[in-house]
Amino acid sequence: MVGTGVERDMGSVRYLVFFFAATLIGAVSILIGAKVSHNSIYLQDLIIPLACITVAWSLANPSSTILLMFFLPAKAIWMAWISAGIVLFDVGQQRPVEGIFALIPLGLTYLLVTNRLPIPYTARAASLSKDKKSENLRSARYYDDVRKREQNRNEQEKLRKLFERSALDDNENTHE
Image 1 (tube, rainbow, N blue to C red):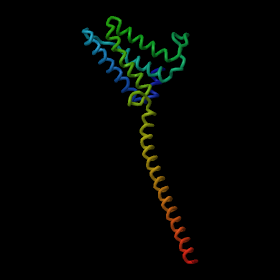
Image 2: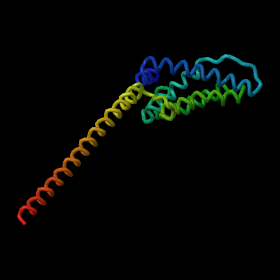
Image 3: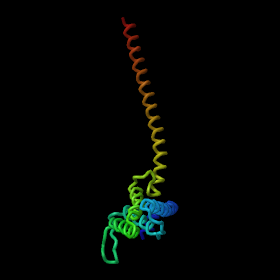
Image 4: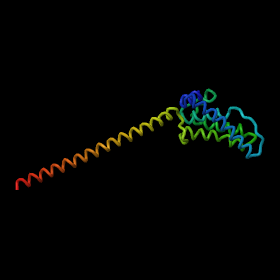
């Protein structure tokens, strides 16, 4: 349910990249946490990328209601917090520093979904940004054309008034 919603939002290829990026960033952040705390490195399961997917879905659908354990209703945004807590306590159970470093991919997921990164979250937003650039270019060309036409009209109006004044001056000079 959660993964399908995120895949629908991102598109299949972007979802796959997101999953592997979450896995890689999670591994690197735990590695850095192990180096900082002078601990040996150990392997983790897929909890970090799955938590990233859950956080992404929860942030994209914060008011959706889900049933915890099939009977406890909860807003989706709480699933993001629960996922972060599970990651923190699962990874940091024996090594608290690494548990904190394991939250880095979840933080990056938050930044991605809330569009605070230069990478758009949804595939639609990515295509819209390309469309928007071309639309802005077309809009700029259109307004340039409008300005040129307006300038031409103003010049023609000035010339018309100048000719009218000169014609009036000629008429006055001939009547005198």
